[in-house]
Length: 158
Image (cartoon, rainbow, N blue to C red; front, side):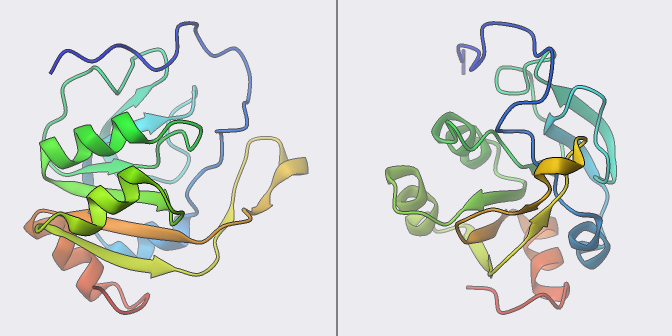
């Protein structure tokens, strides 16, 4: 897949997309990811992963291998969801909001959902830490990811 990069310019500071997945989620999942495909400029603050892609690396058009973790920019998640489904191995943290891409995830035969009611995200600048105003879901695809969701104890998996 030849994907045009989502962002045309290098990130020079925090944006409204820079909310980091809290450590307690990874502690519950108990897996190490091969790649965090959408990391902040300084790397993943909490993601247990062997490698990561920042905006500069362009995780959307870079190759994905192994079990990936994806907390993509919520300003434009559709191309990330498409690549996640094509890759077929990973966990994605995504807003649970009515959209075409959410329906695609829901209808896909190989995905599983763990609905998360509220998450207090982290940021490098603590003035904007806190919950976001919409529910979220942890979506799994592939055996490793789905087993992690089923065994994490954070709720019921659909």
